[in-house]
Length: 445
Image 1 (cartoon, rainbow, N blue to C red):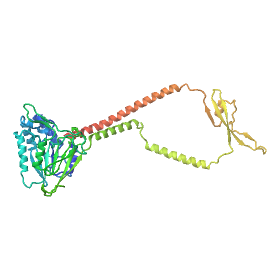
Image 2 (tube, one colour):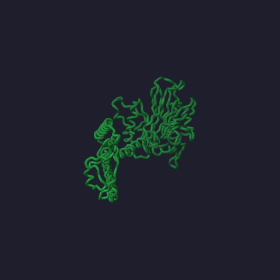
Image 3 (cartoon, rainbow, N blue to C red):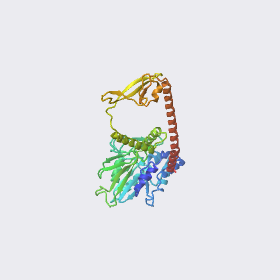
Image 4 (cartoon, helix red, strand yellow):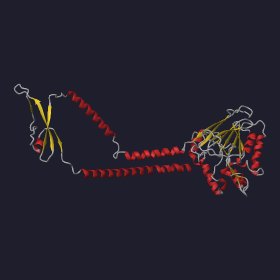
């Protein structure tokens, strides 16, 4: 997340950054020491101190919205008010307004809105909303709430939704914990009332961990709500995201045309599972190359030299065959001869037309001792200058041992190849694992 925040979010150099809640895991139940450790981790992940050199020198203002994993629900507040005090001390008040350009961003503590009216935090949230609604000639407003507004069960959430739709669920605490202990969305009555009082042109929410875009009916017209997905893929969303807003600096009011006052664009982070699949494919390719790579390496010059020699040989053969005259009158016969050891030999005998006394008689001619008689011995054949083809009629009794030697040779070759591959993988791991650990700790320190 730290790398994603620095490379994806900060690269836009936004004027303001707004977090929509849930910075801790079980924040209401953490001890002060555990809460401080989680806070340090959160501040480290979303730190701006090591920004790119091209960024502005001043820090970007950051605003926070409380979530149920930070302070819990209304049923929890009456028993542990120090949880809310601990949060407000670090992140500021839970109900506030923020002006960006000529648009008012209204942040409300949604965890308290469906609580008991006599509750201190619940009454404080509704008093804040009433004061906002009492203003005359207000600027266009954007409502910020961690818990989404009410939506009917199984309502479509748009094309960017990747997980199943979550329907409404409200849990009420038992004796000693009166009030809401959990809810997926605000109640229908609370949602309708907050839309009537604040009259927002846009609603931004979180809590659902996945993207959802839908429209609400309000007295001033249809209002779009964007539920922004989680920023971490480890929270059950394989497509983590954040939303980029562009706010108009031109003055306007809720009675004028609101089109173009606030524009939104949903930005997705890289899918983490695709990154892991890419790492796995690279590992498989590396393993295949290590297993199949020649033992002595690939000698490029050697193969290039062989290619040149082959080309020269082909060209030379063609040139010689063009110059050589074909002896069409040559006629050859072969004679089978067996030596004393039982080996058969084919002896080529050349014939040519020899004119003897003007007659066209054809008779055999030999060169030196090339004419071999059927009773010729092996020594005579070896001394002759005649071309011959030798066929051994005896069956080799060493074929079976030779096959066994081939199997053993292949086994030794495979074992050596595996040992060689294991050595290469060890070398690669010895270099890459420390590098990966250094990069990992660089994100954490």
